[in-house]
Image (cartoon, rainbow, N blue to C red):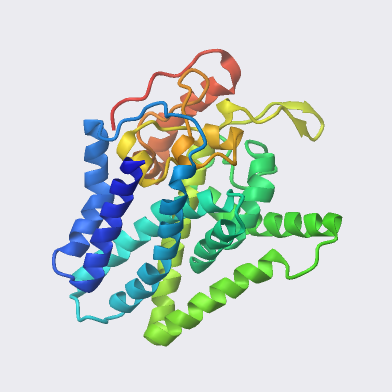
Length: 348
């Protein structure tokens, strides 16, 4: 558990210092979430290649804390980016980039874990975190659509082989919004549920965040919030793209597919980036056991596809489609059933 506390806590501490003191801290925060994470993976730091299994309930406190930290970091970040504290333009740009990476990689992973928990307070906090980044609908789309239809054409967040990240981004955002709304509406109709539709709750959290941003930084704050939210959303969808690219469940009848299995998600065993992202790169186990908390997620190297490099490195490669396809198309084809396992992943 300590590896999760140290990796996430180090980044949060640098971001807080960047907001309060400026100086070298925005550059250090940016370096931490990029070069430092890459180097620590290369060194094998926090290596825990397969994971312990178990309940993982010891991670509850950290997940809740990171969820709550989201809001002062977001509001404070918007204020500083808009000029509060008198930091230099260069520092404000670095802070924008570092915060966006934190929101897209760490806060996203935290919210993702929380919406899968059984506790009502945990689920609501996860929804609030997503909604603060104008992505509340992801809580519905992820639970009601992605986990049901993963690795099929019915899931907007499972990219087919050959599709670029940019085409995926334009498709996944609106389609997941619509699919999530429809799935929640159908569920409420079957259950004869009362109370507000989840879409209204998401909108309410987003409006509340927007009101705080306006009160702190006015119109320029709204613009910075929108830019930070897009930065975070693009990374969230980048993770979805990488973690399911080219993997497909076989059709067993018209409109029916084989059950989702360990072979339908890409995984990465690197220790430091995995700890920083709350084991989000151990994606197959998450799909097999959605209620399993992040510290308990495992990797089975024989049954689960492994990315050739760490998840952050592969996300960067996905921004260059020719490089991405060179790295991934052959591996994805192998896991779609020709009987040949791809090579073991290389170092980061």
